[in-house]
Image (spheres, rainbow, N blue to C red):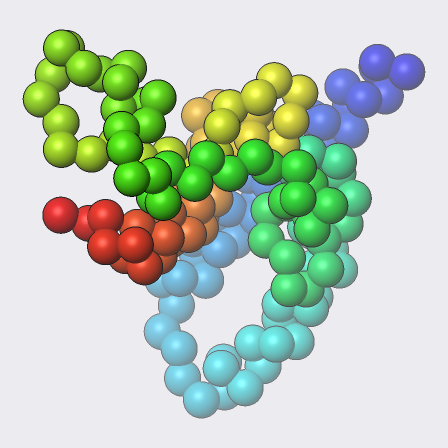
Length: 149
């Protein structure tokens, strides 16, 4: 069973690398009316050949989901540090070490949860679009609570 899992993981990594190169090439092409007209069909074909799977449970993602499915998304434990009136535990972690105005984290790290797979994909699988996606979410959260100084 572990051999099958290993082979599936290897094939998944290969397809992810291939998809990354394909998207990189696509970004360098100049878009015109013809290309933009066929873009939804191209995206559908990409999804057919290289289906997007959840980083945690490996189920196929819907067209409107990115990187993790709705079920795994619900497993992420938010910190809600942005709504704290007093110093958070993360702020206290740095007290006396360096001078900081504010610290911020969207999610608590938990082993065997989707956040571990997200961080693993960012660190070891070079998933830059994933980092931009969560960076956008973090930026929107910080901006909505006026945390950007």
